[in-house]
Structures are given as C-alpha cells and as structure tokens.
Length: 537
Image 1 (tube, rainbow, N blue to C red):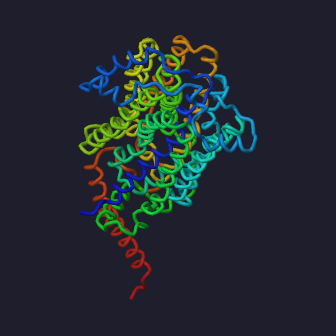
Image 2: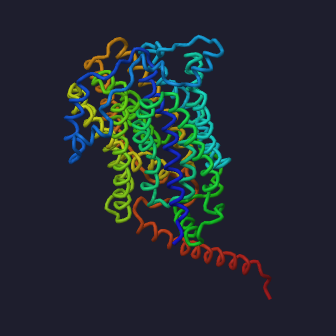
C-alpha cells in the first residue's frame, strides 16, 4: 500500500521543525561549557540523580542510570584547553589572541547572546506568510531553515574571533529563520482537511522533539569532544533534511507528481467546503488588524511563547547554577520535558479531532479547551515551580509537566489560525508571530536583569512568578473572548459550519443543490425576459 502524500508531508514538516528548533537551542546548552571557570559537578549531583532515578525512571535501576553515564563528571576547565579544536589550531597558527580557558562573559552578556536569536526574529513573521503565498512554502520554509543551518558552520570560529560578531551572527540566524513558521501555515491550508488539522499541526511540535533529542545529544557531544562539534553536527543534519525537503515536498496536491488521485480528490473536496480559493483576492489588512479572534490568538501566543521560551532558553542555566547538574545531566533533564510535550501534543490532537468528528464540541470550544490547557493549566504548574523549585526533584518534575501541557497549543491557537481563514492562514500566523514572538527576546532580557549577579532561588522564583502570570492571564482572556469560526473576510463564498465532519459533509452535499436551484431560477428569469420581448403575431 502506497504511503499517502499527507503522511510524507507530516514527517518532513516534523523533521523540519526539529531542525528549526535545533538552531534555536544549540547555544543554550553549549554556552554552559563555553564560559570560563565552570567547575565540575558538586557532590549533590549524584545524590539528586539517584533520588530521581526512582521518581522519573520507574523500574529503571540506579546502575542503569549510572551506566548511561548521566552522573559522570565532565572535564574541568584545565582539561578544556587540551581538547583538539581546529579553530584553536588555526588561531594559534595565525598568532591571533583568543580566550583559551573559556569566554569571560557576565550574566548580562550571556543573556544577550541567548536572546539575540529573537531580537529581529519577529520581523519576518508577517513577510513569511506573504512570501509563501507568492512563491510557495517549499521554497520559503526550505531556504529559511537551509540558510540558518549553513550559519551553524560559522559559529565556532566567530565565537573565538569576537563576542560582538557572534552576537550579530545569532541575530541574523534568528532573522532568517523567522520565515519558517508562518510560511508553513500556507501549506497546511492547501493540504490538510479541516478535521485533520489538529493532528497535522502536531507536526509543528517537532520543535519539542528537536529540544528533547538534541539537548542530551549536545550534552554528550560536549563531554566527549568539545562544544564546537555541536554546530558542525547541526549543520550536517540540517543539510540532509534540506536535500530531502526539496525532493519530497510540493506546495499543493495538484503539483505533486506521485499523489494518488483518490487522495487528491479527497483533499480538494474537503478544502472546497472551507473556501480554500485559488484566487482569494487582495489581502484584507484592515479586517485582519481589527479582528477580535485574530487578536485573541496573538494574546494566547504571547503567553504561551513567554512560558515556553523562558523554560527552554534558561532551563539549562537554571539547572546548572541552582541545582548543580553537570553538562550531561543538564542536557538530559532539559530535553526530557520537550519529548513529553510532543507526545502530549499528538495524543491531545487526536482527542481534539475526535471531538470535532463526532460533534461533541464545537470548533470554538475545542480550541478554547486546548488553549486553557496550554496556557492556564501550564501557568498553574509554573506557579508551583516558583514556590517549590528549591527542591531539585520537584523542579525537574514541575518543569517537565509544565512543558508537557504546552503541547496542547497544536490543537489550540495554532490550529485556530487556519480555522479563521484558510486563505490567509500564513498572514494571520505572521501577525501572531510578529507580536506574540516578542517574548523570545523580552524574556531573556528580563531574566538577565533579575539574575544579574544574583543566581539564587529567590531570583528565579521571581522569574517563574512572572512567567505564570503571563500564562494564566493569556489563557483566561482567550477562553473568555475567542472564537474559531471561519471569518467573513476569508472570501465572499459560503461560510464553513462551526461543527464537525457530519455538518461538513452535509454542507458539501447542499452546495450543488443550491447551485442547481439558482441556475433554474436564472434560466426561468431569462426565459421570461425573452418571452416579454418577443413580437406579437
């Protein structure tokens, strides 16, 4: 049995977002080893992980955990200078001065580096949707990731050369990858039937697998070799994906040379009822800018991204400095919650699509339920982290659970944007990403201020309380004021019923009958006019 084209697209999208987040988070873990004066792990590390082995790993024995080398100490600062690095060899050969024992960046400089990726990341969110509508997601999404991947090869040598150059290289990397997310919504609107969107958009949560997979891998790479190799492995993996993307993905079912005719007819029929017009006309900028449902999605994304990026970007630093994990444990414990997030996203998306198929809940209420989980419930867990984070075991459990609940975003605001307007989904996500993505750089800046020279439990408590307020507030506002029905400005055609597959099928069946009735009426009117104009005999 041939694999459906939608299935191939899901996997390529899934891996594409793994690559996209791999680019975002590689510095988050490598910076732990790049900084000068990072000592080996404290004795508390072994006891904490041994305690966690029973809590988190179920029947896994402590010897299994030890055999996995999670609790082994890494090389210390003096050993760092003995690791082979062609960058160091080149700089020595060129007689160029560099910091051989690690970089002497203070907390503010580190926070600036961590946040620099997002400084202008939001700028291309809106153009990403516009460019994808004009040139196709295959080109825009592919080049966005491809250019970002190529820049990984430059980061190690640039790091040794200049802090400022590294800062602006990360700014540019974040800038160009800003095209990716909104461009993907354009392809989703062209390929995915309305009642399959929750499940398909879960492919976007490949971002979580990227974090879960690469945090521990990067930790072990650093421990075995050096932090420079993290960027080369990112570059090679990303380039392999880019080549596969160019050969396997097409912008629409009609352009795909290998799609089965039955699958193509099913997609086109389903999207016909959602008014996926091939020529939707000029972009209704004023209606989008004044649309309450659009702004509710912006609010939800603001809170969700604030919570996600605070935990994702600063998680490794938090566990390293507050709970004294070593680099391998930091990678493992920082990545595990994101694997849980992906699993939860997939399971919740199937549940959401079931509710839509069986008409148990309206489309609007399904999106509200999902957003209430990914923002409101997550916010309550982060609030608990603020008060119980002094305990190492409680901290990792609460971070894992909070990150897991964010997986519902694929069935909430991310899917809602396509529901509102399939024709302008990329632009709607661009608007949301442009504004809602700003916490990506605002949060690191605030965290840097709160923890500057003050790496204490109390300082991080303030960080988590602010994060909880953003999450709970955005979730409450969305649940009270949002809707996920097809908007009038999507096109001048028929509106999509706000129900499940049964009403969708009924709606599709009614359209030909309505068209036939209209044609009969027009024919009778034309005949009457012709008769009235006929000469009397």
